[in-house]
Length: 330
Image 1 (cartoon, one colour):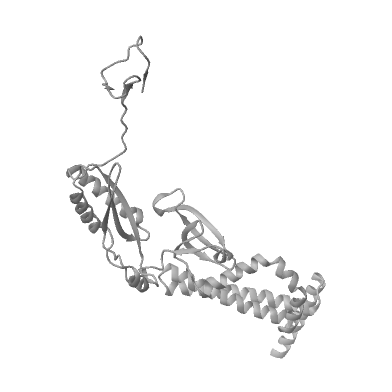
Image 2 (cartoon, rainbow, N blue to C red; image 1 turned 180 degrees about the vertical axis):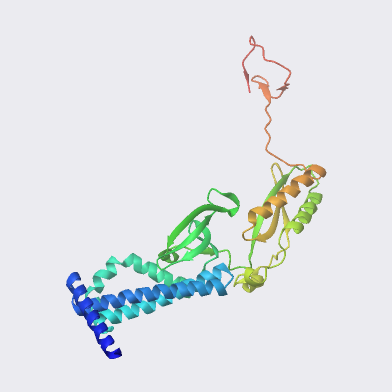
């Protein structure tokens, strides 16, 4: 009975196969390859879903989860490509022969896509930046949220928004840009940024007292220790060897025409630049209200009235020009 059922089932399958060939106008071998390819796509889709599900359950860090998911998808896609080649071409010898005929034309027509693909290989192997890093490439600045075969995606920061905060725009950058534009990576350092703010005081101010007050404020809000673990970049140790200034806040003094400029230099977490600056300014302004040491300097203008015939004697503000006398100038 089992053999009879199997024979009947096989006969029905052959009839259905012949009917599809007749409807689609394909040969039996072509239809078989097509069905195997569709089955392969379905299996690859389920495998990608399985990798994403496992990564979601096992990995808590979103950035690492995204990297694992993307890597798994790419491996599955490569294996699927090899199997499709084997199904349709029976191996690589026929494929190489056919590609060789069109290689010259394709090299010219696909120059840009091939460059972007090479850029993806460079990003994958060399890793000048990864998902989650904050970078600047050319004039573009933002957080890397995705890296694909032909482009990577940034969540833009800066532009018209001060303090390097997000603008809300998403920028898609071709991978080939990494070969043409320099890249700055905020996240591969020690996890901190050096920042500065300037206060200009009059020459009558007690700049020594003002400097001590600014340093005390900076010690309360600025970062003085390198982050540990995942918050530190992969070049943190190298930066520590070559950064001779250290992380302690400092105040630099420069006299200028209208007063004394005190420049406070401090460190802050790379994504909290504006927040730390806000806290520093609030405390400095509060201190300026209480301390006589702070007397802010700002541009002023003096206007002096003089007669044409006597430029050495200024005319007081109370004097008014007589319309019958000579012309005055300001």
